[in-house]
Amino acid sequence: MSLKIAVCEDDSTQAKNMKRLLSDWSGERGLAAVIRSYDGCEAFLTDWMQKMNFDLLLLDIDLGGGMELARRIRRKDEGVALIFVTGLPEYMSQGYDVRACHFLVKPVEEEKLKSVLDRALKETGNKEEYLLLETETEAEKIPVRRILYAEAFSHTAALYLVPESGEKAACKEIKMCLGDLAELLPRAGFFRCHRSYLVHLPYIRRIDRTQVYLDYGATIPVSRGKREELYQAFLEYHKEAFRDGS
Image: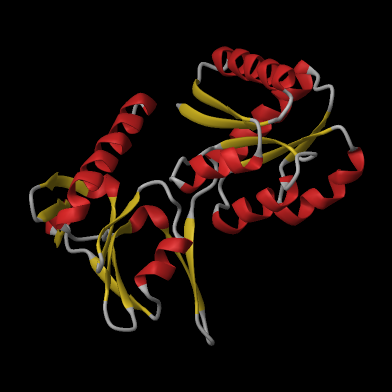
C-alpha cells in the first residue's frame, strides 16, 4: 500500500522532525509513503489544486489561514484524513466543523503520533467514496468506483456506470452540468478529456489521436488540445497503481 502524506508546518525544524517520524512510522508498518512538506497554506494549495491527492494531512492549525484551509479541503475532499497539530489547545473545538480525526499538541510525542496515524490509516482504508445526487424528492449515493465516464448535454449530464451484472454500461441522467459534476468528484482518477466528456482513468484501455477506448466497449472522443495531458494523466495514474501493487 502507498500513501501520500502532506505536512503543513512553517517551522522548518518541526517540519523536518515530523517528516522523520512519518518516515519511521511508514517503514515500521511496511508502507510506501510519499511525504511532502509545505511551509504555508498557499504552497500546499498549489499542489492540492493541481490534483495532488493526499491520504493524510498534518496541518499546523496555528498557521495563518489554517482553519480556512481545512474548511476548503473538506468541502472538496471527504476522504483525506485531517490531523491538526497545534500549540494552542483552545483550537481543538473548531476541528469538529471539518471532521478532523485527531489533534496533536506540540511538542508532538512520537508514540502518540504513531497511534493517531494508525487510527487514521484504518479509517481511510475503510472509506468508500460516493457521489451524492440530490433532487427535491430523493437522494441517491453512487459509488465513485462505478463511474465509467460522463457525457454533457444541453442542461443535463449522463453518467455511464460499470454494470453490476451483464456487459453493457448503465446510463443515468442527472440534472447537472459537467463542470459542476467534476467539482463533486474526487480529483484523483477523473479527467476532462473533451468539453462534453469526463473520463475515469482506471477504465481506459487505449488512447489514440482522436478516441479513448474504455472497458465495456465504450469509446469517447478526446480533444486535440487535451490528448497529451490525458496521456500523461493516464500514465501517472497507472504508475501510482503499480507502486501500490494493484
